[in-house]
Image 1 (cartoon, helix red, strand yellow):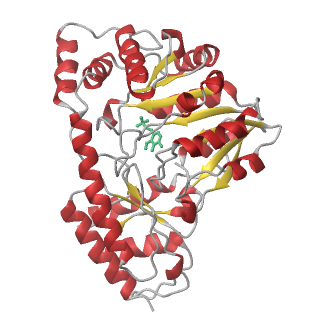
Image 2 (image 1 turned 90 degrees about the vertical axis):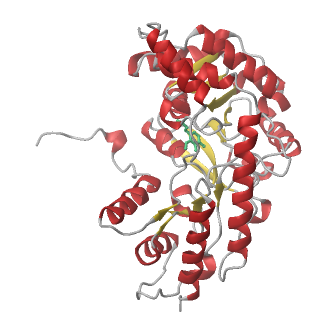
Image 3 (image 1 turned 135 degrees about the vertical axis):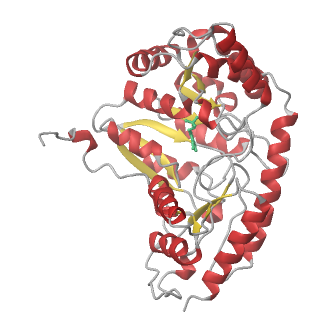
Length: 401
Ligand SMILES: Cc1ncc(COP(=O)(O)O)c(C=O)c1O
């Protein structure tokens, strides 16, 4: 076959999150009772108001090509959300609606990265930032955030990573996979570093903003440092806070010139977002906060359940996640040991693979997120499943020799 892969795709790894789900699916297809805690997907239904609004939009004939950048009514709802919840004021030409947060990340990097440009990504990180940056010819520069720092980005680490080639800093807090948050003081220290580096743009991916625990609230960098507003892109979406992953609606606010370039990329890739999904998003954004608070309480209780069990297990360390719906325990103490089935646990990838094969629990190895010696468990699953997964994990660890 004469097909040849484009150079920029050569050497691009498969996200391990997808590889682990594929393995788990294959085992399930063989009839094995696998508990999958590998995916980052809420286990709640979407708000009925969104479903009804999408249905009504279809009946009323709202089924034609929408404007590329988003329907004016959704942009207005997003502008309201940014003002009320984040203290950020964006005009319509500073807002873009995309096919999920992911397309907005793609658009932003496609609009701004030249070969060799650097993107600073605090580790652990969601897999897509380095992969998309690499697809654009960029170089991803990880800055390790430590478990003893509660996985928060420290200003000194950021300062050391900045070079003249730095184009972006990605700030994803609450963080996938660690569940870390950044409080006002942390953000002020980051803003001080950024003031000395006027060539650096910031992608603040706040998609887990409503999932913060213990009474702590999310704070937006752009509200802490309004003077940096012209180089901050604030990304958010309907997927996590509203359990609307399949609707594919994300939104962002940022400087008009960047939004214009991102809109032009979207225009050439997908055009505007599904009209029915946009109607659903408007309705969901108008629902009372009590719906999100109820989900947040459930996630917090599950986090407490899983962390307390993990902390009682041998070889495991576990920081308390303060947001999102993941737990990111350290399993370095188990490395070098041998499983019941005779497999040597040489690293976190072997740990996750052996756990899946022998204990039938699917998790993602930390190295997929740029942090070896950890695994990520999603707590977006029922208490019953989480308890059973913990029982299996503990047995697996106790049987290591
Ligand atoms: C940190 C982070 N940002 C963005 C996204 C993408 O969300 P969406 O489904 O809106 O594309 C995800 C999805 O897992 C995520 O974890």
